[in-house]
Length: 455
Image (tube, rainbow, N blue to C red):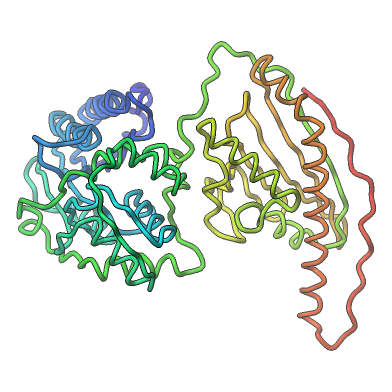
């Protein structure tokens, strides 16, 4: 969006475009960046001859808006000014997994049996279920609207954020005491939020500045134009919780790229020799079993060795503005490209052979952790490779200063993976043939592979 020359090719043959771009995690200058992106897109859309733009923004009275909501509505104005007919939907808090505001409130209720709530929790909102938002967006493809229009959408219930917390607690059968106070400023509230729910710390203040304003529907235009009856608050929360009660939720805000913050920039930094730490161990199990063990890494499973060291690294990362280990993982056993695994992100997952994780913790360079499972008859070998592109002298100092500790961690992690895979395989064999004697597996005693610095 910030590279206008790239937009023309993306819009070739496009009839309708959904504009769902946001820059909230871009730092103090997010308003200017967001408007620049909108201008680029508006120009490209007009030149491409689009029939319609559909945009999702935020509710709020124009004379009393936070920078976040003001930017949302200004983006809508820029898109309408493009000359391409633009349908703008303005919503309050969206109820469902993947909604940042909802996930933040849910996390607070889960963690705090006693909540000292600042003034913003008494602001009024008109929550809407995520399924209803999608229904509006899909219906906008074919709705009879001759030009641009603004539609305010929301559920039938007008409630405070404290009421939303109570409803979540009621459906989760949690006893929660809410004590209202009036002394917490948005800045203090964001610090408190970062302490209690650090996954949302990076943009907590901007969110709180927004939710302290009432966001309710004042126009009947959406009800007149669309044959959609939004769900009430109780049903919306129940459906969101039912989704979370499945084995895994399809969407999480923490899986979004913005949850890791802006990627570090290395302008005028020359990356030196790529450093590799490669280690190999045989595993007396089929490749599928070994890869399944590798794929469970992180989250509740942990890192197969020295979890307290990983926890310490996570807290250190949080202290310098990184993501830490707070994001966990979407699913306990299966990964897909783009998933987060604590402070890593899945870059490749090719079952049952390769899993590559790209680091999103703060490091002076670029780092990856890769596992390769190589079949050897009925067994396999697991190759574990840590890859580091040092960013100048600081990166080299970082790598060599931590090399002794990394050697211990990487040795232990690979041994932990192979031992866990063997244990899982024995358990599977017993479950498959409960009346037969236990299958005895050969012990894993092969030496570790050597460390190989390479270009």
